[in-house]
Length: 160
Image (cartoon, rainbow, N blue to C red; front, side, top):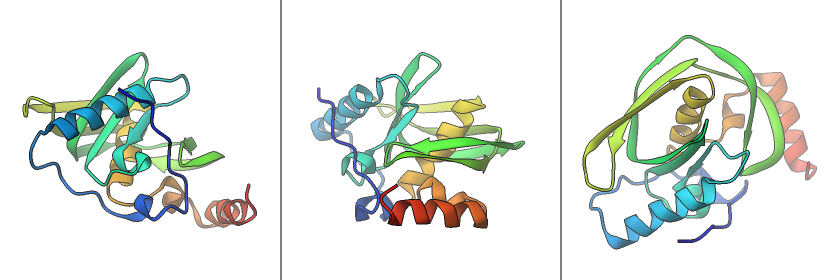
């Protein structure tokens, strides 16, 4: 049980696709607990394993008072569109309007190896997509419209 340090861009672990969890080991159980402990802080909606330096397909979430996790998430369905401010713990203090699906549904497993589903609209839908992007080696600024992305990249290069 630990609150872990968050990796920030340009750490290469954030650009590396994560490996699926093949077996639920004590190390995976500890990782999930650390992810849940670290995301359980006001203002944090989601946290992927690579954001704490572990290249495994696991994320935790804290949306609307609901805290949980998903192992080996795969997005099954998206619908609609939302366009709003998005930020990232790995890009501190950088918030930009980002286009996402309004609704997202994903499946994965829990620590008992049982299939679980997570779905939602608005912030929950955005979080599912955001965290799955992390696990695929992408950060949200990759999705920004050209002019906004240019502005974000300038902010990164100048140290904010």
